[in-house]
Image (cartoon, rainbow, N blue to C red):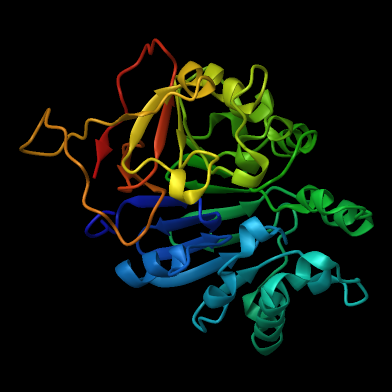
Length: 355
């Protein structure tokens, strides 16, 4: 992790695997956004980041009620100094909504909703029902909800747990003329709809960085938002139990690698104990034959060209991406498990890599 943060620089931490996924954003000059949560047996990743760096807790968002997005979020919601808590779950916006089994897992989801509800009631200014076109101003940035549409969401009939993705709150952060896409688990065909709804304001395909929707699953990837013909920085969190992103021909990772010369995975879709033990790079053909990824040659000031194992951090499997006023991303790898999937022949130079 960076030793300290520059208040003029935007930092995006994408965390996972573990139990869940989390995107933690430092918006200049010093306010924090946390979208969803991820924990290990010992730590809530977002909480550890906030404790390390300090700053204003501006906005905590739960995009939807799936377990791979909420684990550890109760500990975050218990922090009393969040300015805004964002969610559009039907149990919060419709008092007559019925519960389902997902809420009963370790009872954490119910605890999260109870914490959010109490905070909204005690401090109405903290309430953000994350319907499309609603927004929050965070530091020098604007966090805008892209999905779902309120009318559609309230009328949508939930028939299975998978349907919860339809109500997932995809968002975009606008800062310093750049777009940062936070894809949540929103599936197609809604990306076409979203792109059309906001076409007069911006082109989502022109984002600088994207947290790719739904762990790189093909049904959540759409050329309307992910293919504008130029290099972008795409980060994917894996989902082991569904083996996402899939390596097979015609599946999500192939789609992504065809659109960029490299794609960044916070880990492979395997158990935590089987993750690489250092930052690595590989190619899609190598992944398909189960070849071990190659450790990244880290470039450290004063030791250029020396193969260095990064110091183990308190967190595992995350990328931290720093973007300054020039709009050029710098990537900080964690010491464990991150994987850069490259085209076999790349036409561009590597993105800056730091420890």
